[in-house]
Length: 342
Image (cartoon, rainbow, N blue to C red; front, side, top):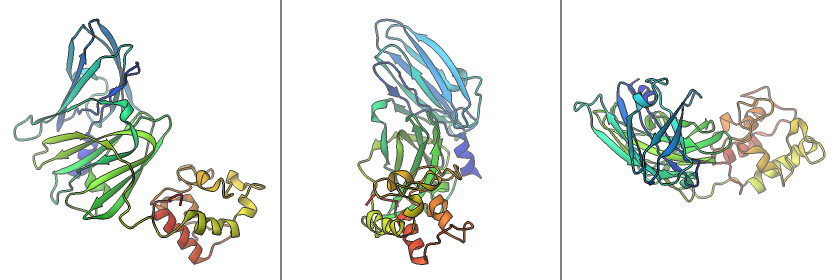
């Protein structure tokens, strides 16, 4: 329960400039366990106007406007800066200003610790560093709570982001965790609940279909935090190679033999076209028309992919054309191996 509560008390606040220069602060807290300060520095020789929009994962928002004098510094506790949001779950904050030369930092303190403070500081990152792949270099999962860690991700894209967290330990992939993140909102969760069968030191790569920014939290036995910004990753590590199932050879063979009569270029039943030139883009991370809460193919998660569920008689009432067990296993394995376009 303590680990679950830590998630709901996490804050990720991103301050985002809409001027010629864009900056992001992965952010802050305001609850009984963690308090934070927001720091904004104006490096201009003139007063600047700033707008802050705080947004919780639930969509709850609060907007604040302020002015900072020439070469001035603004420092505020989060509870004073956003009094209407009050205490509780985390939120992101996006900063816009007509001026360049805005810098800053954020400080999070574990007020529930024996010291009552234990401040941790992190600096701003440019919005241009948002990436579809993020590297969390160190997210330990201690055996005994409340010690834990937590990745924080902010969706910087223009539509909802489908994000898969890939966890690695000892040279092997230990699991995946999938979530959807609304536009300009954060996601935060303790690592132990994302990879419940794992303890010890791990690293995580977050894979998204929208540009994202991230922050890593680590908490010791006294709930004292440390923070580090993520870096862009170049690829998703695959310790087992490129996978054993080929989409173009194995999966498309099933579609060609059994599906194109109803889902080809001439007849796209249910709006789904599985012709070779269209199939991959129409399936992976695309919501089902019949059940929009499901992606047709959710990489690394066949049981929550509508395509597999629709074809599997043990999960649904089945489909007009029922694949063989071997064909169903091929589709399952392709999805669980990451649904590569190979």
